[in-house]
Length: 519
Image 1: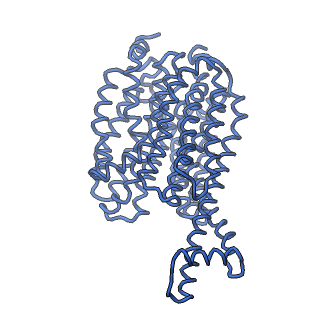
Image 2: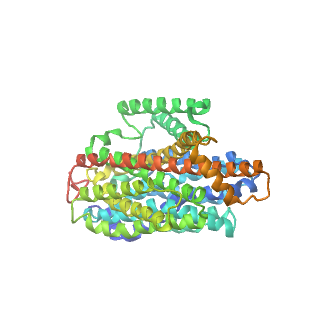
């Protein structure tokens, strides 16, 4: 082991804090702006559709940088690139808070995404190297806390800051944390010999195709439902550009001498299988996180605070589960943990599919707790086994690919859920309104009951019946939406459950394979 490795290993807990502080803030910033959009729109005199580009701009630049992280680390040296990323993220956070119009805010959010995109894969690869092989589970538990808890605490923190201070402070709060992180990284992180700065040829064609393909894909996923998907020429052409660019990128990188993304990593069966499972796990996780608050606030009348409490319970369950799993991952076959976590996470989504408009608070938060436990159970062993066959020299590239697929899974999950709810609501509304005729006995009984409930005594019979019809129709819309939530939840349940056979393809068992770099 060289001097740099010894230095890093001797300070593993300080290293963990150094890389996870900015990473947690970066993950929070992915969702923190969502709850402040209305304040931002009003402050900068913009429409809500225009304001959402502040979210899209960040996601696009973030998605482009993630797969380039391994290549940029080799080009600049990993420590320098990590510090540079934190500096860019921190400086652009100040600029975002100081933005004078919407255009400037969108530009600064692009810069913030460029700085923040590298932090997830860099922190993961550094943690995997800093901790001994037997403590990889502990390292991934620390990483998982940020990855899984960040999207939950983000909206809560953003809402509180916006309500009590102003929307600018959701960006300004990053500055002191960023400064502390830079100082800690300068003091406690060193590059191993294989992560020092190297002279590299730039694969311009691969870089251009990857940038174009991922940027188009992220915009499609973020704006597709809003634009009614392929009925919009804008979404159709962006989808075509994305598919063609990414297909061409794979071909170019396969034959390139110095590719910016080493796709040969997929030859490792555990890595490729684990990445696919991670894609669907985050598809389920983020789909559920989006699904539940919408249900609670639009159909069940929950306040934003109560909905946030339900989400927070799932985050607490994850925080409790992960340290336990970090111990178990070296004592039992990790495949059992992954399978158990997948079943529990899938079951939580199945319970959502059984909801109705009269579900109580206990039965609302229980599935969220199940999801938190299930995700906590499978995240640590899945990440550890996925990376178990990767050499240390290739860890940065593999971590970048893994994080990219995980993030794309989350984005597709959100897009899928919002689209399914919208489409299935229309389907159920059409089916239910077929029975809203004066000749249907159930409708007659409901109209009579509604008239009594509304108490239009002394009113004209026509006015009374019109009010009853409106009351019934509003309840029909709520029932349609509820059935759409049930349908969507059940589909997500089936999708996640179908990944169980893939666990058998991951190589290794107890001990999670051989340490990277040992072969």
